[in-house]
Image 1 (cartoon, rainbow, N blue to C red):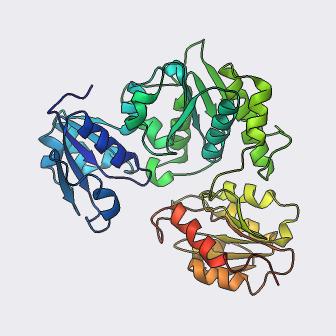
Image 2: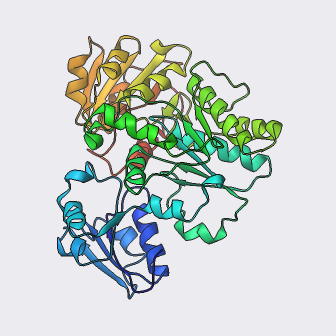
Image 3: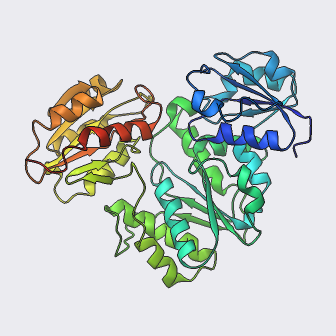
Length: 411
């Protein structure tokens, strides 16, 4: 419970709106907020402008200071901070007996677990969450989405009725923090899949996998746990790919587990048109799958098309210290592979052939357009995070859309 005048340090604005959302909510509760971020005010200008004039906020930008983590009542950490157990500023807070929490913990404290569907997994989380939401809404069940998708729910908590359903996309980092806070699980827990990812955050794949499974750890016998069936099918979808059939199947089960009308749920999922940056068709033969940040996600994207040899794929980006051999192996079956970012050289060294090192997305699109033929596909599905060259995967996808906007069909 946040009380008026409570001193709270918010560590990091974050890429998904959580830091800004929690700061605004804390100010609304009457807290005195210190917002600290390693980025400068200029770099954060658009977000900072929304709150910097509030009388109860202090900004410490371009640095973190120990005193902001010791002379405070509460620290709200951004889940994006890798290996928080090794972070010197969080360590000094714990050593000073200052409670460290997260935005997602504050959200779960405001909700009954019985009204929550939680979704985690290496890939397919956002699409599955959105499909569940579409199915519930089509069946007349009022629902809300949050977590890693849609920004913070804190400011709209007052508008969520006890009979509403909340669908949360939960990252492995969020689940780590929820365990540290004492553990939490939703009534309906959905795991899409687990592939190697975020070793940079967790240290090992085993720890990453363990954190994914924390979604089920505090469930009771009356709760429901769902894992994705690799052989599941779902007909009539507007979105492409076998992986989306699997996403749809588990979304359907999650929605009807909340007593939604099955036929209406099915119709809502079938009418779902997909999310930006997730196998989004942006022109004839051009697909933006910038949300693909793991090799397995790239494999799924290529598999969505009938003939992999007609797919030219742009891969690479930030190095999350995961095995990229599966990503490089795709060069053997696609029409061409174009590698960008920090991992370009690594991907090229792991592949047998057919990889063009382009470094930048602009170069990759330009190079690929020299090779693609009529009826070929140009697919941005990086298999890596975007942070080496872009603020987030959305910015990467938006640039791809700009670069291909004048090329709606192949000559």
